[in-house]
Every structure is written in structure tokens, then in C-alpha cells.
Length: 374
Figure 1 (tube, rainbow, N blue to C red):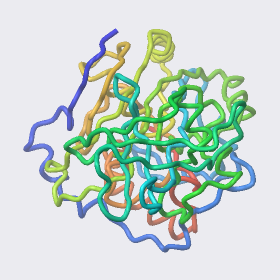
Figure 2: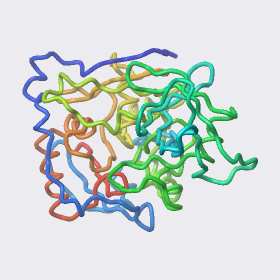
Figure 3: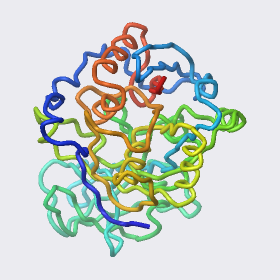
Figure 4: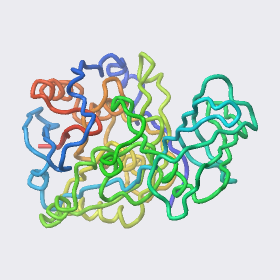
């Protein structure tokens, strides 16, 4: 199984890319009241806008119709990453000043990689004391100290936890779910702990949810399988880059973030069998798309494990994905650019305008969109 890093804006020439390169093309105006800051009472109660990627035709359906909107023989691809309670809040041990951070991962010796903010300058050797924010632990600690060891060039801090322990267990006790800024709460409520996580999440590692999957329930997935639709699982750990907007004026100048992903032989074979019988590959979320297209970069889907910084943008030629279940994304984001590559920029802009007219709910806790071929 390959294990390396891939970086590809698309497998197209610069001349092909240029007409779609201006970031301003991927903008739209969203009324603030359409931003969903709380989940619906039931996961699968969301509305579903269906966009035909061949004709531009739009239908208004519901998430519970998903099984009927797919065909027997199709393959639904889920990202089984699990969101870590990565947001941390504490105070500087020396001054008592407020400190906030976001856990990003570990280095080889077990030290933590974080981004943090505090008033003033945290010196090497200085510590912050975290307060418990999360779920009760079997053997709870009263506090957790993080000592600054080093700073990386990109502003990431290397900090040593004291006492040390299993990182997932420590974050479960001292962290909270890393909700997007537009939800306007730093500490997750009880609903967030359940709903900012897919029902099938199993591989801890993300600092943001693969939000298209938040709509899927065990009952809906069972209905999909009963209809003769296979399910394959991949893993992509959503990183900090998903929060970062495109700050350049041209897509070609944007430095795409890197994320770790994996697809194993069993998932590859499930997808290949579906393809052989004429089924379509339906990715759940842009993270599943990034994983599949990375693994199929040379034209053939193969097992893959490693980092990807693939930037899917018009006029990208898809090698694996036929259809996509996705949420409504922020303007000028790489995710909005990705769906424009799949369905065409004009059709996506028209679909978003329709969704706004029809008062769909937007972003992580919002409604969904199914982009599929005719």
C-alpha cells in the first residue's frame, strides 16, 4: 500500500485552469439568518437539494429520500474519522492570564502540536494549566499542564503534557468539540458532543467534522443497504486548513493544506465491484472525495495511506467520484471550489441561489445537497 504525500492542483495544464482561476468567481452572499448554529432535533430531518450535474435540473427533497435517489448497485463512500475534543481552554501558570488552544497532533516523542493564543508572549519552559471541559473520566485529573518546548516555523507550538497519558483520554476530559466560529460558542453543549460527530465515526484524528455524514442515521444507512447499495469506508482526518479561507486572488496562488487519509484494499475492492456492475461511486463529503481522488490520481483506484494536499478545482477531471452528498459551504472556500469542479461553477451558483431563495439552512449543522449525474 503506498504511503507518501501527494500534491496536485489538478491534472490539467495552466492554460486550461486560467478561465476558472479568479477566486471572486466562487463568491456568494448569504443572509446571516440562514447559518445553522444548532442541529435539528433529528439527524435525517434535513432538507436535500438534488442537483443534476449534467443538466443543472434542481429538485427539492429530504434526507430521508436518499436511498430512493440512489440506484441499486451504487456504492456509498463514508469517511469514518472521529472528531477529537481538540479545543482547549486554560490559564498561564505564571500570570493567570487566559490561554486558548487547538490540539493538532503529536510529534514522535509524544509532545503535542497546538496553535495557541494568549495576551503577551509565552516563553519556552512556561506552562499553561488546562481546566476540565469535557466528559467525565474513569480516573479524572484535577488539572493538566502543558509546557512550551518549541515553536515551529508556521506558528505551531510544541508542548509537553504533564502528566502524560493517552491523548484521546486526556482530550476527552480537558477538551471540548472544536466548533466552527460561526456557531458563536467556544464550549460545546451536550447536543454538540453527540451531533458534531457522525454515527459511524471510529478513527480518532479530526479537528472538524466531515459534516455531510452528520445527516446519516443507522436506520437510513440500513435502508440504503437494503436497496442494494454497497457501503465502503475511507478515513481522512480533517485538519486546521478546513477553517482557512482562500486569501489569494487566484486559485493558482493558493497553498492547499495537507491532510492524512487512507483507503484500504477492502474499500478499493468494494468500489471496483460496484463500478464493474455499472454502479456509481457516491462520496459522502468532500473529505471522501479528496481521499478517493488521491488514491486514483494515476487513473486507477488503489489502496493509499499518507498525506494529501490535492486541490480539486475546475476543470479537474474526476477519476473515481461520480456523485457527492455534501453540505452547503462557505463562499470563497476550497470546498465550494471542489463542488464547482464536479457540477460546473454556473450550476453550483444557480443551485446556491435557489437554496437561499428557498431558505435552506447552511454550513455544518445545515441542510444538504446531492450532486449526481443524470
